[in-house]
Length: 222
Image: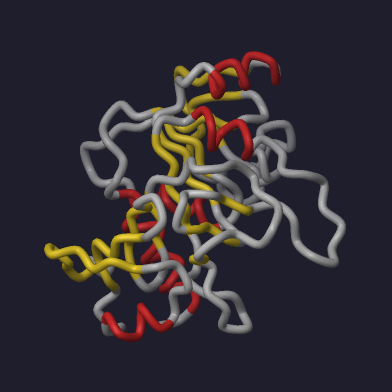
């Protein structure tokens, strides 16, 4: 499976978790792909921690507004009914529990729902940004990540080794290998990519892994 297909698979599967009326925050990178796969009839509201709600699709080439960008600095549009506000208001929404779902990437996520998503060893980083608040403030936290690093190491760890973004907050992890529910010291494999066997997924996963008795294959997007 090509890298683009793997990322689309993750985004497509996460989109199935969203419910009509949800307020959703999509992290930078892979999570932004989720909005392209929202099922028909599902109306969600996208919130951006840099100060607005009601994000629309990316603008057409040449129609970008440099003053309308998401938290990652990518040009976006704003839908009718959207609103702008300052950072204090934005984080009052997040910390007040008004975000139903946050989707963000990870460097590591472990069997206790701990998340490490900001410190890259050997590189200068600006800090964890709003991720700390989003992971603690959202009602449901979904991690979107490729299953392994470029060197083949599992991102689903027994315990995180990198500095944490937040502790015990992750509910669901979706990778290119499967869908995993955090279970206080283990992860439960709920769905698997049909291209992989259970044995291959176990071998690629450092976290203790339980297999759901209702395990099924992930749906592959057309």
